[in-house]
Amino acid sequence: MIKTRISPIVHAACIVLALSARVLAADLPVEAEVDVIRSIETKRLRALQDADLDAAKAFHADDYQLITPSGSPMTRDEYLGAVASGILDYIVFEAVSPIAVRLYRDAAVIRYETHIESAWNGVRGRGGRFWHTDVYEKRDGRWQVVWSQATPVWQSSSPKEAPKKPVEPPPGA
Image 1 (cartoon, rainbow, N blue to C red):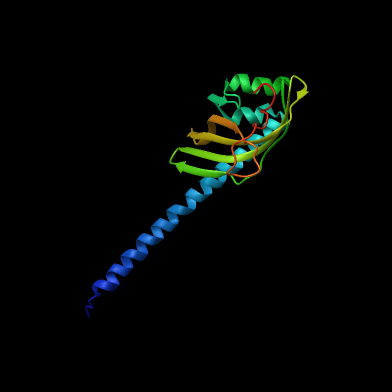
Image 2 (tube, rainbow, N blue to C red):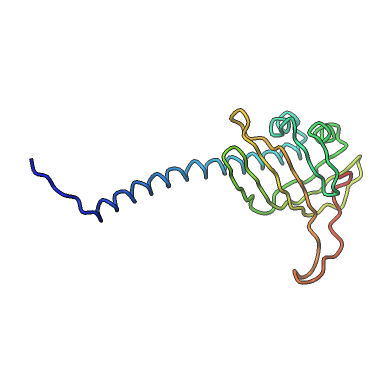
């Protein structure tokens, strides 16, 4: 039997390649999970716009809380109840920027900008753009949103100018 000696450099290179393969393999599930969260958020917005309460309820955790653009907190039942009854009618509710995702094992924070047009008690608001920050948790193997906050985008002609009047939040928000 002939023994060959592996040089320390070749040995180190093999270790680096093996570790790199593990890191790359670990990144694939993370990216897949990020894509799942983005897809869920897009479907959640669609369910709210369509007033599809069965779908919307599945996306929102029982202890969900929304902080509206005016700063008012709403529970899941209050929020989805307003949508179900038609008190809150999303005419347009769509992401207008990429959905950024920060994943932390069984929790994720997302941020993106939306365009919203809505009516509250049949009175249509002006609509506008809003930044959304949402926190998702993976519960029983399924991602659900637990917190949401919407912030109106201030209008100004230049980023260096002082902010002008914010875009009006949806009625009742």
